[in-house]
Image 1 (tube, rainbow, N blue to C red):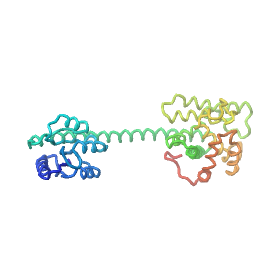
Image 2: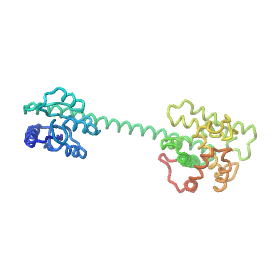
Image 3: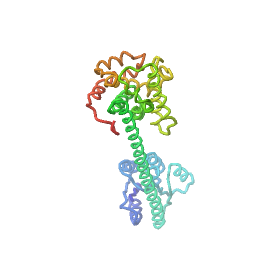
Image 4: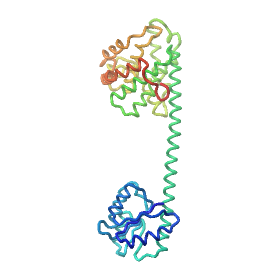
Length: 350
């Protein structure tokens, strides 16, 4: 372990160094005549024990210790202060500054070796404990990441299964997720929240699992009765996802319930309007409608992307949140790349 000895007296410095070096735990100690220089050494190196004299011309041991303790790397490193002053106030000041132990001059070499050995053993245990704590933290993070990855994979595969049932190849959920992430970034959501929208968006139509195939796959226009049944998919989806224990599932529930609401209050199922609609659902509404317009379905041909883009912009302030539409427009080059298949898939295959 590494020791730094600070003393303005060359003879004292050499004596303490020779005594300390006899400890089996110690590499050759670093010797420093100047406390200012010693602080500079500490800035570039990590020492495990500091032995500092009390009375020095540039900076006394109390001030040195206080300056050392101000550095995060040295908040728990043991500090032995060597002093010939028996005044109680000196000890109190040193303790307040962060001194761990004291040694009075003239000192006994055996006592110095014992104090150094004890403090180095304490320091070694502290370092090992910190290493263990860091290892445990990494293991917890690794396990948590593994669980999140499995959750994300299950959600994505479930979303693709729903899309296949709805007559799509499953690419719709991939494009919607990517466009949602771009819009979320454009309106200034945090990276964590953008990622959450990206992951939850594919479950927006999970409720279609409860809609009859005859309605889902009908090639022509739905009757009013059939449309009413189709609209039930949002409530079905919300019930499937309700009372989720993770942020991801709770976000997916909000999206499933409200992605057919409209900015002007004319949507369904709750006729929410404006900012009463969860922002995640407002984002998905744009991405879902845009990609649906651009996709061929049993009941319609695909629109050119420029025509679909114009439709989204035209519905700003009525169907869609104007702020989200502005972000959609600002991200248009990236969205075009997604629609043309020029972007890579997401972390879990979106």
